[in-house]
Length: 159
Image (cartoon, rainbow, N blue to C red; front, side):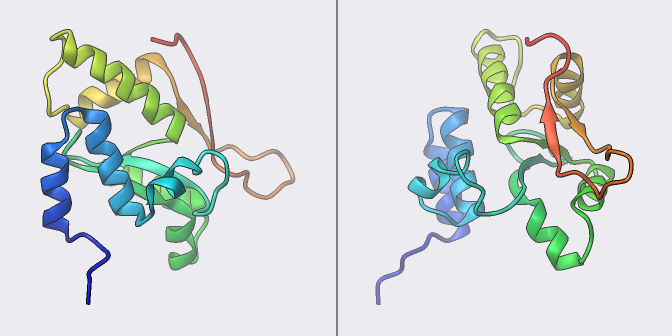
C-alpha cells in the first residue's frame, strides 16, 4: 500500500533543503496543520480550524515554530481561548496572527539578508522586535458581554 503522508524526519529534510525562511515555514505550517497546499491557501479566507495562531516557542526562530489551533486546544481542555493563550505565553511562547507573522518574517528576512540579524533568532529578540513595532493581542471584553474572540490590531510604527 502506498503511503500518503510524510514522517517527521522526511519533513525535516524538506525544511533543510528549502532555500529561504518563508519556504521552511510553509513546509512546517503544512506539516503541523496536516493540510494540503490548497487548504493552507484558503486559511485567510475561511477558518476551518477556528482560531489559529503561529507560536514561536522558547528556542526561537526557526527551531521552535508551530501553527497552533487555539480553538482545538480550548475544546480539548474545556477552557476559554484566552486561558489557553495565557498559558502558552506563561510557558515562553510568542503568538502571532497569520498577518502579523507574515510581517515579522518579511522584516526578519530583510534584516538577515542585509546582515543585521543572524539565525537562529532567540525569543527575546523576537519579543523586542514585536513590542517596538506592531501587533499586540487584544483580550479585553466589552462590559456585560461574553469573552470576545481573540483579535490582533496594529499599534505603533509599521517598521
